[in-house]
Length: 236
Image (cartoon, rainbow, N blue to C red; front, side):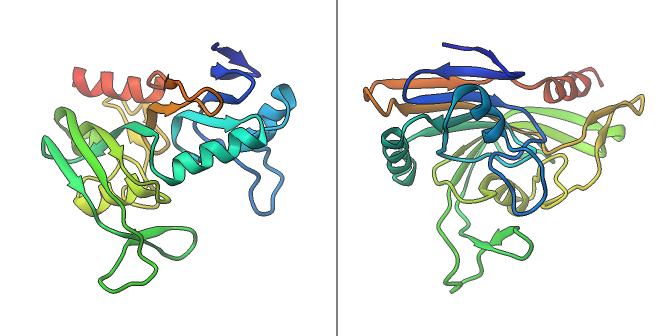
């Protein structure tokens, strides 16, 4: 079942889980301090008690799953811990990546909640692997600050900020990322604002239903800001 819930697009809802299309600019769980309402809290007001299974960064959009029972939460947590769900992200990056790259730099904590590629021998480093494939390379646009490309990122592990750190480390960071690359917004040829957040979208998630074990495929359409930026890059 899919539809709209409190302004949040519901991708799937049943007795065991709730999947939504997370909008940009929202935190998934209550933060430390402050009074910003989290996405979980907003959804609970309509759907009842929810358990967080995985997270997406504030600027990231797309498929996000919550458990609706403690049992489903345990089952989904085990599946994510084992790396069983298959995730597909779409990202707009700087530069022109190769047709395919396997990015396997270990990731370690840095300061202020950021992450970094682990140095050799760093005990805090955790193995991380992301496969990146080029979907479309755009000609360099002066107004865009050079060449940009659309890629798909397939993380085989689930480290914090993994895709963003790997893209930065490989030399093609997100087109806008204040933590791991370019800080400024992306403006179009007419100085119109195209992107004001990290252009990373969780487009597809494949997992097994926690109650039935049946395959479940969840997909979220590309958000308007990323689609508009891509259209502008194609038009020149």
